[in-house]
Amino acid sequence: MYSLIHHGRRFFEFQKCHNLRVSVENGFAFSNSFSSASTVDLRLRDGRKGNNFTVSYLVDSLGLAKKLAQSISRKVSFEDKCNPDSVLSLFRSYGFTDSQISSIITDYPLLLRADSQKLLAPKLQFLQSRGASSSELTETVSKVPKILAKKEGKSISRYYDFVKEIIEADKSSEFQKLSLSLPQGSKQENKIRNISVLRELGMPQKLLFSMLVSGGGFVCGKEKFEESIKKVVEMGFDPTTSKFVKALRIVYELSDKRLEENFKVYKRLGLTVNDVWELFKKCPGFLAYSENRIVQTFETLKRCGLLEDEVVLVFKKNPLCLRASEQKILNSIETFLGLGISRDEVMMMIKCLPQCIGYSEEMVKKKTKFFLKKMNWPLKAVVSHPQVIGYSMEKRIVPRCNVIKALMSKGLLGSELPPMSSVLSCNEQIFLNRYVLKHDDKLVRKLMAIYTKDRVS
Image 1 (tube, helix red, strand yellow):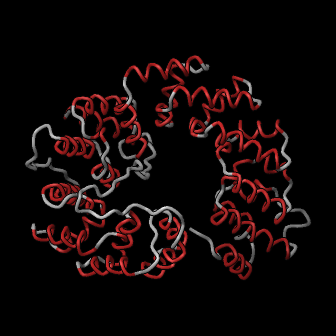
Image 2 (tube, rainbow, N blue to C red; image 1 turned 30 degrees about the horizontal axis):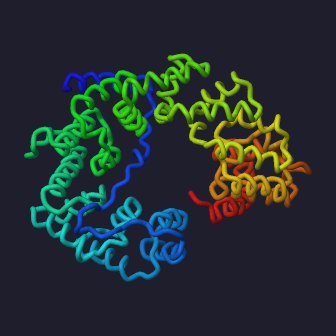
Image 3 (spheres, rainbow, N blue to C red; image 1 turned 90 degrees about the vertical axis):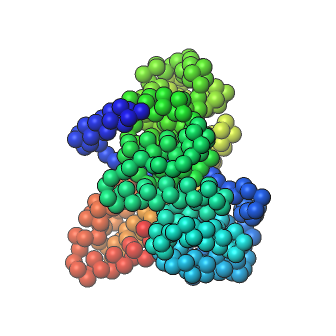
């Protein structure tokens, strides 16, 4: 295993010399719930009751942006401030800063519905009794709040020690192997050993902590884990990215028989073995789709009007289109047809932007109506540039269009509306240079005020 670590380090040092782009993304979407008999049920209640109160509370009490608060409210909801106030007060009494508390709640919002005195306080007291200083306790828990979901005693103690050691190692740029007393061959011992290996390969804290507190079986194995990580490293995946984690999970969980079956399916549909592996490097998750889902998606797209080689090209462009069910694909196409777009044009849009078959009816209609009614762009502009439907209304579409409307009202753009692609498809700096910064200082200030008003960064 140590030779693998050495090989991995050399490989990625070589890659970085060639300007390998490192992108640390959110780790696998691991889920974790309090499972012991002594823990309270923190599961999100069905329905949307209390969402408005929750959003207001998060904004007022934690200073969170409204957009972030709305996102959190979809995971946890409450109708009064009694329990969340108690949780926040507990954290503050242990020296957690407002910034750390915001980070904790953003990462693990279900804590707001925990019983602060029966569930959280005993665990914080336990960690403090082990000799954790106030700063160590607050830093470690704020880095990985899901540690509070672990059972009080040896379990939470071991996870805490491991998290703290990673944090300290990163500060000193050194990492020493753990010397925790764990049962040989136990699930927990395997997980910590395997995560130690990933840490040695250079995986960042955020991804390590996600796996540490998860129930992910693929980091609990031993021999199979070593085989899987060797394959993923040799394929060239970068351990600093979440794509490495996804690839490792797929390689670990899929049997050789299942992989062989999937390869046969893709080959039958017109892809080569090299095609499949290249797509795997681009999007590891696609290899886990069942034969039925793969065939169903291919056949659905063919029935909708694409030729067989066109379906293959669509899939190569974005294999995630397999996530869309048959009904989702048909509904998306009906939505576009209902807007007055011809079937041939819809097929052209899919070939240009495969993920558009997964867009919701509400989103497509809302944005298309805005482009046509508010901005007077022709429908053909949307057909030619379907990517605009995927742009954020709050971050890109509305702010930029408000600037264009202001310039039009002053007669500074002539009599014709600029092309949609000129306004929306360019990056922010090009847009600002093209439509804002070229004017005199007074107008620039006015335009920037319009551009940044209510804009979500």
